[in-house]
Image: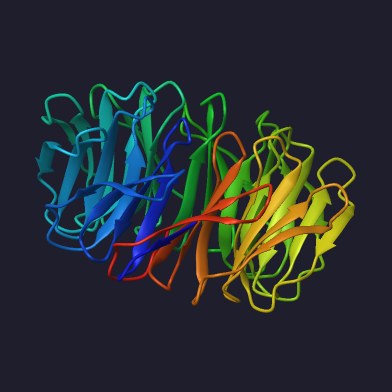
Length: 389
């Protein structure tokens, strides 16, 4: 299935049940698509500038969007009606997310603020001030009681989602913070930066638990393992590094890529790591022995995004060669090559049940594919600029 747009798509995602896809675009619209038929279910119009970030609520009944028009909007996913327009940001909104219970929304952007909103009333619950440059990334803790944000001001801040107070300001990075995430138990935060370091912080005390040094260029991507015991990182030095989250020791430096590493992820069982690189390859590594399990070759340009299927049996990659490739994680065989995009593939994701794949491209289209047959299920048309995420 191809979801064809006429403008860039900046963010896409499946609903929790995998039946719908939401996309946000440079054409100022948010679109909800039927993942089976590819039909536009609803076109949500109202934003007056690029839509940078979109997400479904945990129950799938609402959609939140953040835009360069400085607004956050909550929409009814069934009717397409605008539920609330959340106004307050004075510059573009870069990142939005629902709380785990779906009752609140967090947003961050160019005005240096993090804002928490009541998803029901649309009221601004708290404006969290403290950053001195644009906010790159925001997310709630697994229990919804805290928010973490990373910024170009080189800091990571943990906030009390109830009071809005800064719980801790995590200082130490000497360049932009590119990526932040809570550990699965919410007790730690990991951050990756252009300063070449990965840092693990105690989310309760704010203390730096470990500074993980080893990268010789910027850190592009970080992630905790599912059990929270390890961290994986990748970046501009072409290496994938696995760290012991307790001791901070470098468990293994996985070398083989010949250009920078764009994306890293653990498998759902934590036993493997996948990495995608500008060198056009996808690598699967054994996270226990650190051996290279498979080198997946087939792309003819840089690999931009990688992901494991929910059952861990397959790996998907999207590339600047305009293709999406699905691989057998055990054998390394190419299961399917999904062709149809006419420009760079920027983002790929499996549906929650692993039966479908969604891809977004600079060719302005979103495509839904059958993960088993590789058939294009639907091309979703409507956007007027490229699809980024």
